[in-house]
Length: 206
Image (cartoon, rainbow, N blue to C red; front, side, top):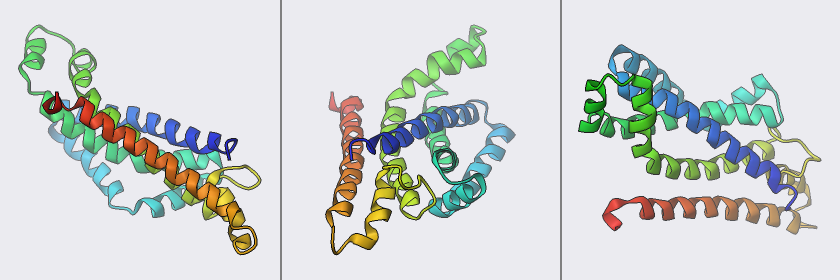
């Protein structure tokens, strides 16, 4: 069980980190520059969001291939649009503040304004969203492995362990109970950390 946590935690954390970086690049640039660029990019993101996430991931894994690489690519593609939409909405509330206009008036470059003035003031909500996404990625990766499209047996990934234990539920139910508990508890922990950070970073609670 402990050895298998490497796969689930690695997939969840790495996927959320890469998705966050790509989501920041897309969402922040759309909110900052606006115009036709914002419309075209966000419509593409909306089109991806309209596809059911599990169906999209299954299709991507079937194209890319089973295993760690396939799961990570599928999770990134399905997670980036959500990050981009959320980060865009957050940055839109910041980009029209007076200190951003003052930086523009001083001739500061756009990239420097985004990195030094806009994103640091959006860090709290972004961090909370990343932690929430880690639990979603762990659940999704376990689901793909359970369906036989993710990490393959004999690798001790929790979803693959559940799939391998399904024929033995009557004789050895603990083979499925413990991986299921590990998935639920790990996802719950990340959600609780995200909820705690939401309260801690909310200025109204200070």
